[in-house]
Image 1 (spheres, rainbow, N blue to C red):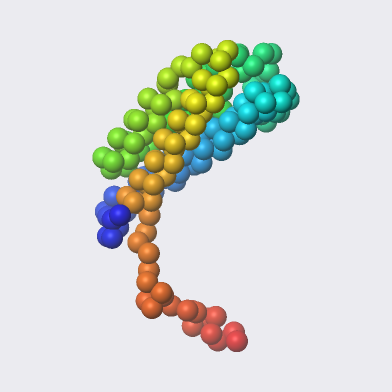
Image 2 (cartoon, rainbow, N blue to C red):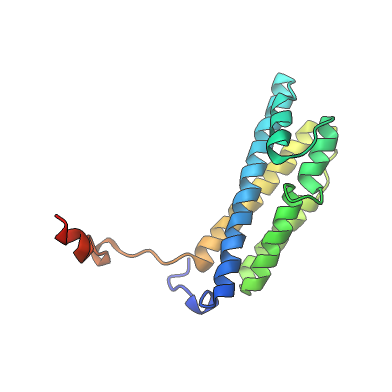
Length: 167
């Protein structure tokens, strides 16, 4: 892990803006992928499309049949699709100019762009798991590249003067 934060990468407001949106898109991909995985398990084990219908409703996607919904949520050209989010995430990673973030975001886009057979639920579950693994790697790289360094316990200020005065 980087012991030193390369703050020159985040000094400009435009870089902070890109870092913010990178994080937002990572969160979106993670949450939608995990919700989709949960709904797919319900479809497989409980033979119920209800969780898929609820997910579609929450994302503003019309649900007609599960294959059409899966295509839309995975690869649709709509803001609530996973592919849409990872492409925007990659754009922000490129804007930050940090090579490892760009590389991991490209890997994530490739993982999402794979097209499983939507009629084979096990393939779609494997695909969702692969996307979650890739997004976890992306999160690790973000943490290593742009998260502030840990401050050792003995170096932390326990209370501000203002907090001490109020006691």
